[in-house]
Structures are given as C-alpha cells and as structure tokens.
Length: 399
Ligand code: PLP
Image (tube, rainbow, N blue to C red; front, side, top):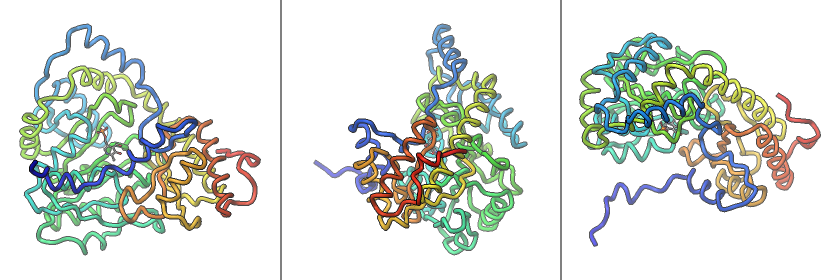
C-alpha cells in the first residue's frame, strides 16, 4: 500500500490522551488529567436542546450558523469587550474552537508559512499548524517569570516567512493571564511585521483576578485578528462541540468557504443550546466560576504546602506546579504518580519543551477529590524524600 500522509504519520499522538487512556483502565484513580469541566451543562441549556428537537430543529442551518445565534454572539462580544462584529458577515458558528482554529489556519496559511505561538501551550497548536501546511515556531516562556511573554523572544524568531502569531490567554496549561499592556506590546509587534493574530480566548470567562483583555480590542488588532471562542469551558458544554470565530469580513468570507465545504454547519441542536446559553445562563457561568475559584485556592495552596511550588494561576482551571525538586522528569513524575498513587496529571513536556519540569493538574474536579489528590501526592513526595515537614491531612488544605 502507498504511504499515508507524511505530516500526519510523523505527528505523535497527544500526550494527554496517553495518560487519560491508562487512567481509565485503572481503579480508584483521581484524574486531574483532562481539561474539561466536571459540571453537567446547566439544565436550562439542556432543556433548550430538548425543545429544539421537539420542534423539529433537526436540519442543517445556514453555513455560518443560525442568525439569531450570530447576533447574540455579536452582542455578547460587543457587550463584554467593546469590539463590534457584523453577524451577517464576520461571525461563523463552528464545531468547537478546534474547528475555528483549523479554519483560520487553513485560510491564512500558504505552504511553508511560519506561525509563532507561545509555549507551553495547548497540545493542538503545533500539529494543527502542520496539518494546515504551516511551520510551527514555538516561543518559550518560563516559569521563573510567571510564563510572561518576552517580546524580544518573539522578535528574534520573526523571519520573512512569518505569517501569524497564535495567542491563548488565559493559558492552557499554565493558567497564566497577561496584562493589557503586555498584550498590546505583542499586538504592536504583529502590526510592525504585518502578522495576523489568532487569539484563542476559550478561557476568557475563567479569569479570577483582574479582567480579561480581548486581544481584538487592542489598538491596531481588530483588522488582523481572528478571535476564537466557544461554549465548551464557560458553559460546561464540551460535548456539544459548539464555538465561534469573529474576524474581519475578508478573512471570514474565506474561512466560511472552508467551513462550508468541510463541515457544512455546526449541529443545529447545539446551536439552539448555545443561543440559550448566551441569553439566560450568565448566572450559571458565574456560579461555576466561583466554584472553580474556590477549588483553585484550596488546590494551589495545598500544592505549595506539600512542597510542589506553584505560582497562582489567574485563569483557566489548571495548576502548573514545578516538580523540579523531585529530580524526576515530568513524564517520570506523572507516570509514577499514576502507578503508585493513582493520581493522573499531565507531564508538562506534553505542552512543549518549556513545559518540562512542570505537570498540569486540572482542578475542574470536586473539592473532596482535590484534597484526596493532595494527600496522595504528598505521600508520593515523601517516598521520593522531598515532602514538606507535616502531612497535609494534619494541616488541612484550607483556602
Ligand atoms: N483551545 C484551548 C486552549 C483548549 O484548552 C481547548 C480544549 O481543551 C480547545 C481550544 C478546544 O476547544 P473546543 O472544545 O471548543 O474545541
């Protein structure tokens, strides 16, 4: 048989899935591995989907998505961030941010175009850039300075082939957010070098201190930015596969062609649910965010108490503690923690080389589970001979 596509065959499977697959085979595992809310989608949203099926909304929709949904998305983005998008020509409803990212990359890139992105980062960026014919150019960021982006690191990697920069704040996996000034400095670089900006803001609502800055709202950004956002995280709707892109008309029109021919439209029922989410689920979002915030404080304090240094993550639902003092690599740490104490975390190197020395722990899981995970992690550290003085159970992992 003739060989399969080389770009695809040379791409390793996701490091997250490998651990998740092992964990699902084991009993009594506390999984801090997979990045999805532990909440079920709020009832009013599920009910809207039930009504939609009852009313027979089981057909295709227009390619760009239901107009009332696009109008609500436009109102939502304008209301929160003051950036205006025309619902009839600049907003596309997509099958997850995953599809939005793919559409944007396939629309913006010619073969060999380089895309900058800040590591450690979401596992899909590197492969998706390659699948779209582009060349991934990771920019390292470092735990020592809170995973802030250093503009000089970006400048030094810009070449005549650089086409775009992909940003994601709040960040998966570090939970880092950036100040408006820092983001403006990145936009200024994009303007100076005529780069497109892809801004994955899927965790925007999960910002715990300060306010989220929408990249498209910064000076000079809107005209060159594809804003990616969706319902998976804020509304606990990962399984509905529903999201959206906002971009200037010329870019959106081209993205719509890719979407039209490859996807046709997002699920009609999920679109009805998403409309309900925007119209009536703000209170549910706020409740879930308050819950994550409480877990974040308990868990991050607990990690630092047991001797795993962890900076305060200001967004998303991930803690990214350093495991350097254990002397293990992040893979060895994650593997042994899973095998010996049945706690699943993701090795930091799954998110790029600069993630080595860290592990990602999702705290989108119940408080009791998080507390038990801390006890097990401390036991593991004791075995390695590097735990803090008193056991966490005795101290109580209080917020
Ligand atoms: N972008 C980031 C940064 C993510 O962490 C994820 C999922 O974990 C996605 C995109 C995928 O989102 P969706 O469920 O909307 O496809």
